[in-house]
Image 1: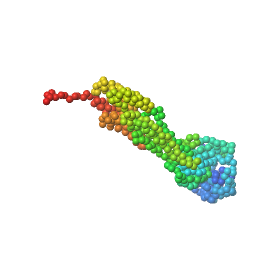
Image 2 (image 1 turned 90 degrees about the vertical axis):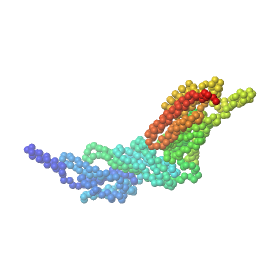
Image 3 (image 1 turned 45 degrees about the vertical axis):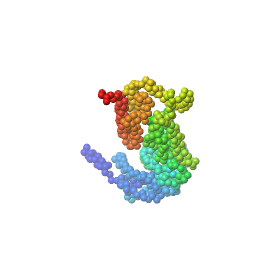
Image 4 (image 1 turned 120 degrees about the vertical axis):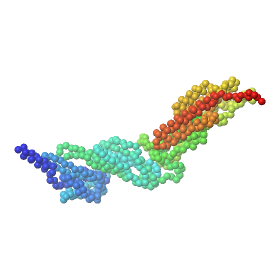
Length: 565
């Protein structure tokens, strides 16, 4: 009895696994009817068997429809030992014309589906509540110039849950296109229905004059829609392919006006700014001055911003870094930025003018040329060559009469108090020190005690790696050592090794800096430049200490002949 039941179950199992199936029906349905012209809808075709998917011929649809993506799925259901198999096609279609169309019947293995009458209405004739997914796009202007940045904003409206999808960029000829910023995800209510809205911004830059056609952005993906299972009590979410496209747009592009002078730049607004050490009124020879110039342009491409050149006097050495370009969105406006930082190193004392910087640009709204200007700036540099300073008065008592000296002193005191009061106080103090040295001479072969402290300050400055501080401490040390004001030029005149050490330190600090910023491997090159600067600091210290030993070495007077002739 048990063996008999076992064989019955085995036969039933074999019958379930290997039933004899045959195609008996084909069903074709659409997800909505009517549909709008140009709008994609889904054609579902299903058969009650697992068959080769290539047996379905959809070429007849090409006459009246745009055929999009086609997806295929297979399923098998077993209920009460009965197996039901199904093969399903989902085809995206968009009607080419409005009116009454017919989806033709499909035939597989002699089995035919029923044709489907389809009504196609004008775009926008249906209420928005009927649209589960649509795209809207607009441009910032209908008329532009060559090289002008045209903003193209596209919005994808979703009333159903998005499973996966791709939003493709618009297609244009005769221009460049790139995405600007990140996608924005929000929500809007359209005609009383809430939509999830995905917004993306593109920048279009036309290369040639004339009319350019913008083929709208497109979306293709899968969404989840609620569906009712046949014969079931409960609904479920079904993945359904969907496709939509934005309408095409045209923009008239004008050439650059022949009257424009300068490098062509078109923008809504252009501004020049600079960052400069405003808290310093006087600068020192050899000390770098950091200056950053920034060019900002609204609704312009960053690559169209011109390079900024600075024409400085010959006494000011310029060491520019690699310029930086970027684009960002601020208050719904696209802003492009060009920024360049430079180290300005004065090689001579005096008053110098940093010339104004001008950038011409074209205003497309007012249709005229305008100029962004950075005003000129005057700087005062101290510690240079003595010949550049006001002439020194002659203070010997025997060179002039008392009345003449009194008149000259009054004039000089008035002039110097107005223009160089700080320099005068320092100069008088040094001159008094020199007079004291003449009246009560100090042994030249012994350095002042304060020079030892200045040498320690120079060593600490070298350890910090701050070139400006090193040059300042070097001048202070030699001024105390020589008991007279010493500039870098005067220090260099003391010996050839000193001149070479100062020059090599300046080149290591500023010349190498410009080269490092132009390389791709900035981290490695920066480390190498720091090591080179440290080596030059060590070399400078060795030269200074050697000069100190030579300076403090007593000079031996030649011996008189023991046996004079």
